[in-house]
Image (cartoon, rainbow, N blue to C red; front, top):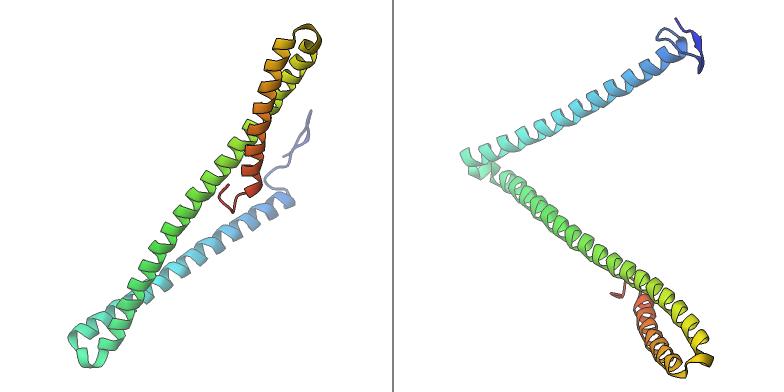
Length: 164
């Protein structure tokens, strides 16, 4: 039975709530198994009927050829359609992954440029009065960073769907 410890009372296996939870879990597993068995048997029956129709078409073509041909055509069309959709899904997945990688790379690069800009602005402000040559170099670097930031922001503005 349950005993009270430091963490409070423990529920035992014979408590009504625990038994109710177990019976609910068992019912769900039983329903899942029954549903899986039903689907498996239904698919097996459908495939067996299809095989018999194809066999009948081979034995008596004048009477059953249309049915056998229809089944074979349907199966091959579904197989082709499934493979085409899988190829399209793989291409789409690769395209989205590439686009997201580009977007992430652009954002990381913009963050790095912002850090560089902050350091250059600080250098420029410090060197403006003391060393005009160093200030001119920092200003040129700031202008090149600005140009790169503008290019990256333009790429980022195109977005995912325009191939940015």
